[in-house]
Image (tube, rainbow, N blue to C red):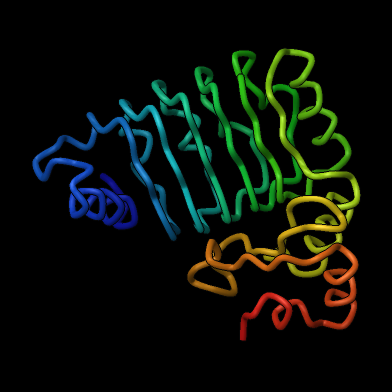
Amino acid sequence: MLSEDLERAIAEMVAIGEVAPDADPAALEDLVVMHARDLEGLETLTSLRTLSLIGCSAGDYRRVGRLPSLRLLAIEHSDLVSLDGVLPVGVQVVVVRNCRLSSVAPADVPTGLQVIDVSGNPLDDAAAAVVDDGVLRGAVVTRDDDRVLALNARLARADGAFVCAGAADACILTVSGLDITPHPERVHVSTTTAEVDIALSTGALRALAGIE
């Protein structure tokens, strides 16, 4: 049985004409899920080839790893912290942007991966090294520079919801998960790591992000 969040996502795609009203969920090939807290039943959508999870606070994302047909996965502005069990064997393109991802082990990354984008995450040193090793296997890798990674690590320890993406002198402050706003994907503030560092030190992150 599908969670209410997944049923809502399918209904929204029916409403905009992307999915036929009488379509069998198990036959769906593309799905966009926004603001979900419950992914129960996701693994039954075995025909999915592309999946986008945006602004979610599902906690456990390992159901994604049980989708045998998945080739493109995007998880953005969500509370994902680890790739353990999340990436299916056949996935080719992975975009995990503006989340809380800190842990990536070599076993988490499928050998056939062609593209991986992990910008806007508090990757620890070991995780960054694993991601960088993808280049040696021919993958296209995108991540933040080391100064932004260090700032994201401090943000994760202090709050957990805020992340930055980009470079030190031109980064975007945004939000992961549903803890402090119902629309984390709408928070995009052009700033610098220096400004974010000051806001972090003075407790003014919400003000900088425009969140009351």
